Length: 478
Image (tube, rainbow, N blue to C red; front, side, top):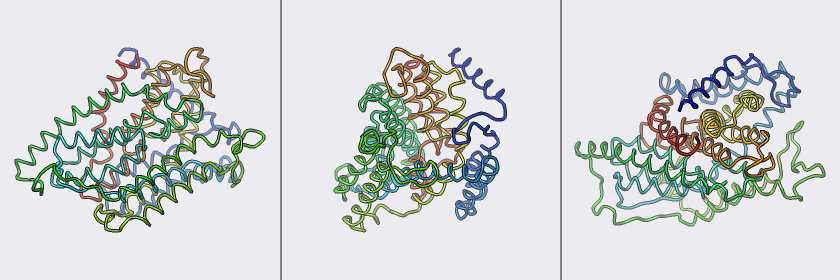
């Protein structure tokens, strides 16, 4: 523990004493990127956290305006400092190669999962909720955290519709299904897919199962006692589920949509495999694609992924009766909100990512516990995929001779484990740490569940998740 405290003190000192500019991304031709260019990112996060509390109606109607405003407050000064061409290239690179595939994947999973409904006499009780969370957590590694979240969130909401105290169920749902459960395969979470494309074996992540199991058991134990107390409180107030024979009838409709879910998973796997195939590379080894502007290229593997996902969503809607979506209370509100907010997050976080990339090798981070916490804390507020790549690259370039050979260099198993767990697990620390978090919140809000505010949710993380991560550090990453 003393090592952890000393490490954080030294890290804060480095950040505090760091000059107001750092040398980072290659697109700026080694010009310094001012730290103040991160203000629009911080401003947008502030709006997401505070405006729903103080100006809820305005925020609901003007999210796009706020996103556009903060995005321009980054783009215009950046264009002034580095030129219009560099600004346009930076924004297009972000939108074409990051946001486009991100939002198409979310859209496809949102559509397909929305066409599957579960009905029956199963009432939300602590025991039933434990079973649902366990199933969702185990599914996350095989159909992705987003896929499992979209598939399981509506059944969980339906079965607990009779309860008054239920927001905590969705909080633990985000902890487990939307994040921690995705650590066992590259399909589970995008950071691991990036590791796979850089030489980490596909099934290597199964080594993380003991860590995932430990976290799952501890969190489910905590959840059970919280849920049991609130369940008893609801029962004491006379609330009872409207069922005749509890737990005897379960019917799943739209089950054929699992075929389209498999299509989407296959598309994600192909996006990690195809770029390494010779037919998709030019003579210099660059991935072939459609040239957009400057160095921005929409790669053919990305196009294939997008087309397969959109085809799956189209076929899902064409082959599923509208009554199923009606039973799911399906609307476009959640995907619209996530699409709007995350386009601003992706654009405005570019300076922060560039600074992180420039500083990564200078932080002196080599120990597993350092990698776990640094990758994790930054992944809580930044995109966990580039954060994972920054520290994987840092580890590969650190001159280790014993460990797993990747295209970035040799990375010790314990260090790779720490980076992977930090990126995947700590995405649960905030609503913006991982896209499914916000999707689950939006769907819960639509269904009348009063979810915790941005800061109250972080309070849940500090009280529940952080102590578990401290245990992870002491047991697995010392």
